[in-house]
Length: 115
Length: 116
Image 1 (cartoon, chains in turn red, green):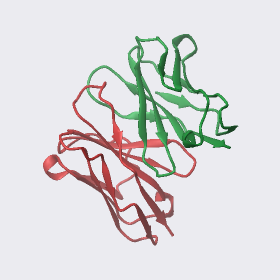
Image 2 (cartoon, rainbow over the protein chains, first blue to last red):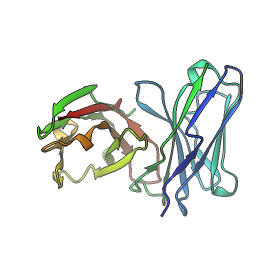
Image 3 (cartoon, each protein chain N blue to C red):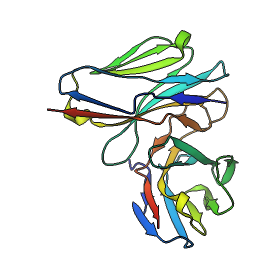
């Protein structure tokens, strides 16, 4: 069974440009999460989808970030316009059910560099 | 608010040494879950273990063992007879429960370097 996949693996853009990150969760997983790790710091939660609905978006830094999960399958995270402080590794995770006990499985991350 | 502290930023050991990675957490929840993830050089976060707050039994899986102590709010991870393949960044994380799925709160990670 395929794990969580993320595309692209790396992205280098200039300040002010737009970038869209994609996450494909494990098939059948209703829960999808986005996290971000800024250099050397902790991995921080951004938001959580249950199917196509946003369950918790309390971690989204500002309105330059837009996440979607149309159809409840893959998700995209768009940053527009990108700023220098948006650089970091963006992780996606998915879990099967709605119980807190369900383990979140992570993808390899997308390393975003904003110049 | 929840918080996870991994005070050790980086640890370097020689192969076959035992090493313990510390994790201290803070939460007001009475029920919660603790996790360890491994991030090898390839970048993905690999799930290692989940422990719920009602189960204070220590767990052993091969060379890995975990010591959960509610009294000190710690969930430490020990690798016995370390190997070069254990070199990675290790993250401790906390999730509130029970109820619906929710976000993980991570520590800053401990980079473990195992050399020959």
